[in-house]
Amino acid sequence: MKLFSGLFPPTQGRVEIEGINLATASKAALQAMQIKMGFIFQEAALISNMSIYDNIALPLRYHTGLKEAEIQARVAEKMALFEVDRQYDRSIPAQLSLGMRKRAALARALVLEPQLLFLDEPGTGLGGEAEYLVFKVLKEYHRQTRATLLMVTSEKHSAFALGDRIGLLENGRMVAEGSAQEMQDRLAPMKPPDSWSA
Image: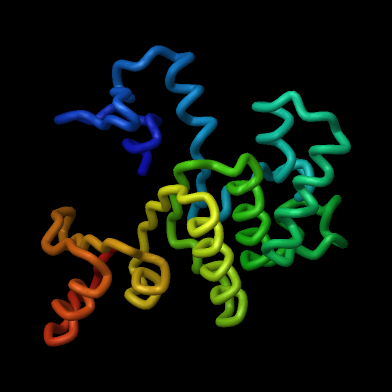
């Protein structure tokens, strides 16, 4: 995902999004592309000395010219979407559970309404109901915006809960790929490897 987002250049081949080679793109072109991206990291990756509210508002303040009232409205909308408790607005991330930090990170990832969303284990640290809520929101976001979602997960149920197309990685190599239905049919008779990513 770091290659896909342009954070690192590939050692072989190339990564292109919308016809732009991320390794050779100008800084301005790369920044314009990254504004269209949202990121959900496995450990939430919130800025540790910044309040939860300010973490979520940061992309809007950095990338847009929205007035503070508009920022407040957008942040409130995304916090409500993922049921981030507003009593934590002024709390720093260390004061929250991993589950609540993950919800705040999801709200931050969607605050710019990205066209390309990278998800690294989005269900990690969430209980059953919270995980269901997250996948429900992400599916609805995809349905409404037609954004591309790219998820990495070691959880088979997560892959099938969200994925239209699924690729199976084993030892760093793609060993199978297809639609969710094709992969369900293909994987049903076989025992999955101990560690797999989709």
